[in-house]
Amino acid sequence: MNESVKRSVRTWAAVALAAFLLWSAFVVVAETEMVILTRFGRPTRVLREAGLYPKWPFESALRFDRRVSIYDPRPSEFLTRDKKNLVVDSAVCWRIDDPLLFLETVGDQVGAELRLHDIVWAALAAALGQVALEDLVAVDPDRVQVAAVVGGVREKAAAAAAERLGIEVVDVQLKRVNFPEQNKQSVFARMRAERDRIAKEYRAQGREMAIGIQAEADKQREVILAEAYEKAETLRGQGDAEAARIYGEAYARDPRFYRFVRTLESYRKILDQDTTLILSSDSELLRLLEQGQP
Image 1 (cartoon, rainbow, N blue to C red):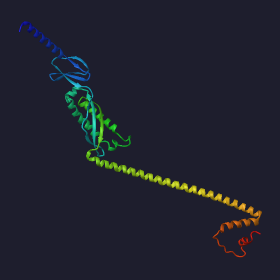
Image 2 (image 1 turned 180 degrees about the horizontal axis):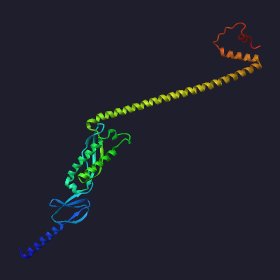
Image 3 (image 1 turned 135 degrees about the horizontal axis):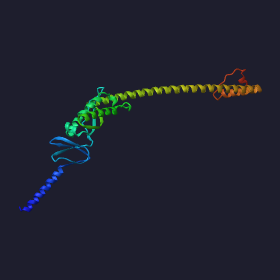
Image 4 (image 1 turned 90 degrees about the vertical axis):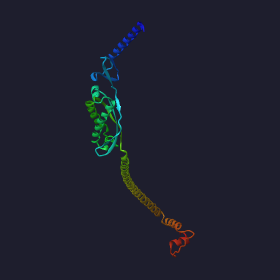
């Protein structure tokens, strides 16, 4: 190898070494992360803001995601104040707030979620143990206290996670509240029995209202019939009085003709082709039949 080639190799080696030293003398922090600089495993600085920072070549950079992460644990079973078992499916939104404490206590995301699980589970168990089942699942919206329970769990979990782990708990939510599989049938049976009881109460109230309406209708019918009968009797009495007056006036004008007309009306009412009369010899009716009106 000639001297020029050796000089070229040494030049390129020097450039590469200089580039490596230059690259190792700076660290780039992205918007989505925080960086802890360590020197032989011991933290020296925390870089929270995005940018380009100088460092010693022998310092290492540990990067942590500063974005919100979602921890979705498996559903867990809890006991309410009235001794009812519930299977609760929850979700936790969290992010790193103190990277140094986070590094010392949990180290990575897996360890953080394991510790968060314990904290949130303990807070949920304490909160659900102070409320009854009807405070979580009810028809009346004013009775439901899910928001208050979740708020208390979020507050306790946030305080514990910030103090122990350097983690900020952004939110805790209940995705689903269910009964254990072995209890579902008995719970559904009780729910059906309760609905049947309510339905029977409604039917009884309906029958009571129907009886009351029927009684009121019968009362009104009797009142209307009585008023109609009274009015009919009054009109009938007025008609009879008017007829008697007319009859009286007619009789007063010509008694003999009136008696004759009334006798003819009697004939019309009592005589037909099948009528047989047995009359005495001095009967007025017989005299009219034989001799007519004198």
